[in-house]
Length: 128
Image 1 (cartoon, helix red, strand yellow):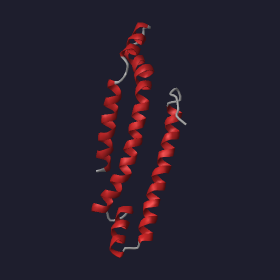
Image 2 (cartoon, one colour):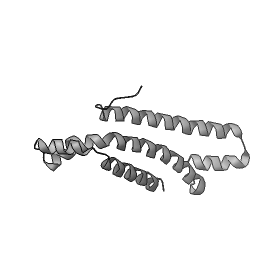
Image 3 (cartoon, helix red, strand yellow):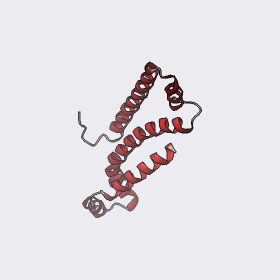
Image 4 (cartoon, one colour):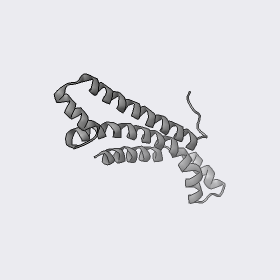
């Protein structure tokens, strides 16, 4: 279920990025004598990569939420199952710690993705 949701997000993001490549860059590379393989590697892929990377960040965030919901619905272990068991006992402190643990994990994963995206797309301006 998680893989399906993230796959759909990435396909939509990639297709949207493919449409948004400015045709003038493609014509300029062709005018300079680049073959289709070179145009893809040097023009299309660098133009798509920031949008695809943004889609990966969104897909990972959604995947974390879907994972907890899937574990709540049908899991025998994991954080969703812990929440399911704790709801019946109602220890608020354990539930809050679980929520904070998921939030910390999500922030750590997002920071790792931001760091790797900045390394992969060093030609794009960064917002600080």
